Image 1: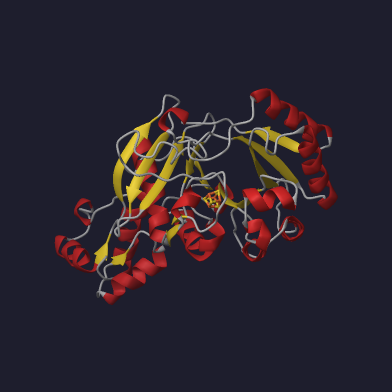
Image 2: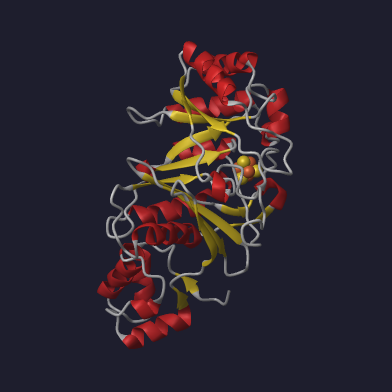
Length: 364
Ligand code: SF4
């Protein structure tokens, strides 16, 4: 991109300062923030409350939006999947999931991912680059506008989950910046308490997040309860093995608010990590560390080049029952958007099968 400033990731005070450098009064900054974040406009042309001359100057030095929607799909269950491109041509993928009580947007924090989880297709892309705060905010704006209409207030409120492509804690600064922008009541107004960040286990950043005021909720992708298996499924475990990870979770626990729990996610892989014995190992691991947590069992969605199959529903149920019998709060996550390959681990499973458009996908 040229040196134009990307405005979607700027807070209201930052936009005010930016407009002041152009000789504009503070109220113009507030107007611009409302146009970008509250009315969710993506071009200066649409901001007709700003003088034409100012819009032309903004066009010269800044960008109201940078992501381009390449294609989108709507599932039979209402899930919507967006394939976008950054200004430098990298893929970004976002999924909107309608739910009974509150809709959820699953966004990406990176294009590709540097981690090598063997059950995830994004791993095969490697890291293309981390997304900017603006690119994170734009994903949400695009999904909200498409689902409800441009600038229309979400009728049931919105949850955000950083569970798309990338390891969010390897892009923590931009992520927190984006969350600060979105929390503004004069803008998108989604507060961190409505946001869950899922990590493969970047221990130092878990500790940093624990110290962050107004932090989002945290989910840890476990996938295995022994180092031996986790080293294979999630090689990040060789860097930060389970004991270190769980100790960091114990520190994080101190930052939990009343009623808040840490989430452990466990993707269910047929014959790999779903035996009764492995359920007991998982329960013992969590009970030994006595962390205020719940477990989400995630049915794996088969993705052709990957060597895993989903655990049968009865196996998932048995696994859940064993965990619950040992006092672990356990939930089974319902797969969504399977027909448009938008479910966890499926996003890249049919690369190009829908439209010839390259896509990415993640499961953490
Ligand atoms: S599961 Fe998440 S952390 Fe692991 S490779 Fe995929 S995107 Fe990266």
